[in-house]
View 1 (spheres, rainbow, N blue to C red):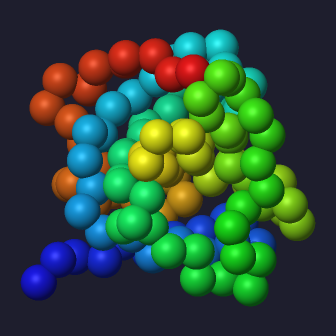
View 2 (view 1 turned 30 degrees about the vertical axis):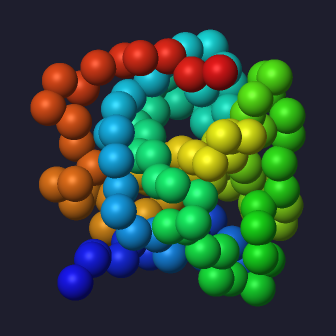
Length: 116
């Protein structure tokens, strides 16, 4: 059985249910810093079909950050949620998960690969 990861924003308006995580990585690029207010962030990618928006808020609000991606956040409390790419990928910030210290969320090399 595939593990389901749950999480959401600070106020609970946006809730997430996701499975089959891949490509855990960190990033310290200027865009990620501005999006979160943190020096460095940890991301976890999912195929779009493996993420469900389960809260009353539905899908998060988005701001177009590049030619192929939008930053996702809660329209009510402003919490950063992740990035939704035009390609079938949703990258979620690991801090929005209920169990943000799960071993699945760490990469072997902790590579900072940069984001757009």
